[in-house]
Length: 370
Image (cartoon, rainbow, N blue to C red; front, top):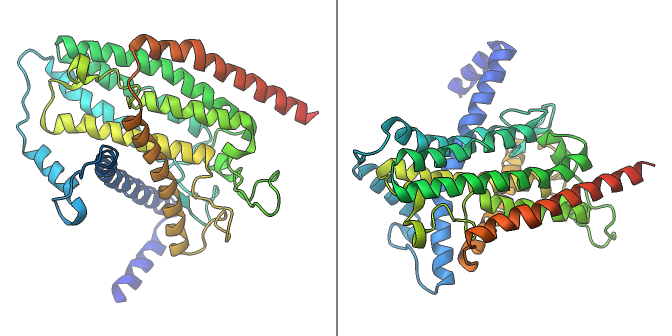
């Protein structure tokens, strides 16, 4: 107790700016730790789900129910030989895996993943930016560089083809992802993710009293529901998940851009894919499913206690995990597109549909304002 009391006294003697900097550091470290934990166990969940779909057991030997399998995989990746082929461009070859992992970590800073009483936004977020959504899309555009550099630096045929495919695919579906989010900030009138989350508190106004539905943006309008569907398709393509995994395409490219990698550098590509999946699910949770809020029992207001804050974080993570299960289900149920089908789907069908959705949303909001 004496130690705790002395720590509290020391905290009270710090300048407000120092306190804020330390709180931001604690939030950043906590968010990164949770991200790495989720990356490890989402891989395990996917392996068990795909085993269930294929009527087999999956990993169940390392620890009870296979719960120590992520630790075994990490040890295996660390102990493998880190081999660099002689024909690669060494600087770019080493830099590429870090560039794949970096965007997901940077974007984690603006995701409101819990409630914090006494703050301006009411949300626990590392950096509460007024242009948070623009920041997200700006950082997401960097993810293509890691894969393209990996394909180019490998100085090999199949990785180069995978990198070229990835460049064209990610640029195409980044356009779709950005356009699918436009109706959201037209509807809310803000690019701040905490304000978008605040617009989803309470219960749905048009729902009958006997059916207390949450006031999530996905339920507020058919246009926003269509935005969610378009955003989900774009997220699958941006994370190179089936049916959009053409940059890897084992049957055609033997693994694509990461063929020449081994040990932890290969593991970074693997971790980067799952970190991007988690970020996409967290972003969809914030934009369309109310983030950490629930309309019942006062859970749409900032928590007043530490346990209440943990409950809000748990609600947010539960929604993220539910969306990750959708990602996993799609991978093991849908066949891969041909490359021409993938590009035609984006430019000839989904992007025009997203533009039409923006037009309809703008006309609707203008008519409502009259």
